[in-house]
Length: 424
Image 1 (spheres, one colour):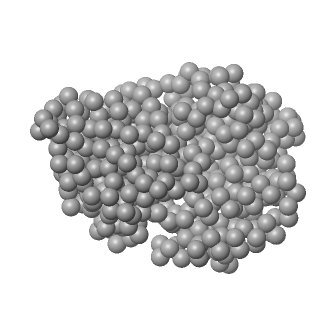
Image 2 (spheres, helix red, strand yellow):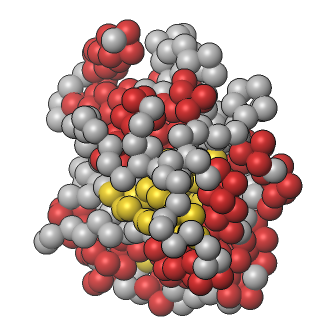
Image 3 (tube, helix red, strand yellow):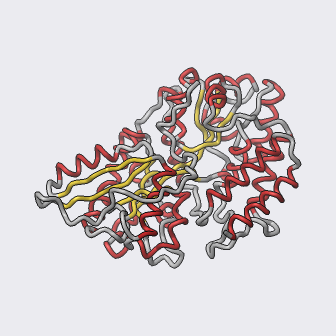
């Protein structure tokens, strides 16, 4: 099976650092007197069509949208702002990448200087706060989508394990980590199947809920400190694996897509954007999956972005006006309906189109309501500039455990590798 990634939020990062960035901002204006804005995006959004709509409403503005793969996009942006040339007028930054740019704060426009505080109340507090500087005086970007996590569960597997299958009952039955393990034991005993698909997802159950994980807000590496919460998340994943509750279906692989299709594992603890992937890549699973809330201890976010304005632009006010319009609650609803981008503006959750939403793939359930409930429980987290690099090392350790490695040895070796990488 060829795995399609059209709907993916977080993608694997490209390891190649691009040497130059093209199509930058800072242009005076086009010959016909229009202000031209270059907007760099990534992933599957409806921002091109929204840009066209904005141009019709604002004929004096022309917007050039450039879409790239997530890794290439961030490498190009980082290269251009570091060089001080070639940056666009507007650029999306994915949440896991945001802290990478904090050390270059002077290379971005402070959106508070353009009046962003006037719309702050339109967005979830935790989403907004994550884009602020540590002192709260600087705002890097306006919120776009988010990735609130919930529990996708296979109805057939739950039924075979004598577990409830209606979302409301599942919410009650699996409302704590202990109850999740109890359900996992039933699934294994009655069906022989694992509860969770992979070590990564078992690990992220706790990780995505941590307000500080690998780094503190002073960018000091804290993963090796005694009592660090990351180690507890690691140990939890290992514990589930040793009990037989974790499968070996690594995300984005054909085997994983096949397992989703056939219901070879019971639950996927994943964000709202996974719905689009499942519809596209696991069509045989239609009607066999539902969504319930995760235990509150696992309330976390995975994915989502911000729209930033690099300081190189000569049209910061026009760029801000477009960005503010693009991420308005009304347009976040359009992005949700057209591209599956989950809104960070809670007023959208009360709009008729959202309230009356239903997903045929999920048996007609309004899954959006479940994710909206989850979105309100998420804490603001700090990830650090080398979050992705460090996270990949921990995931390597977990995969090694699954292949027979000693958990403590793998952990210590991962920490040693991470300390070396951070010092570079």
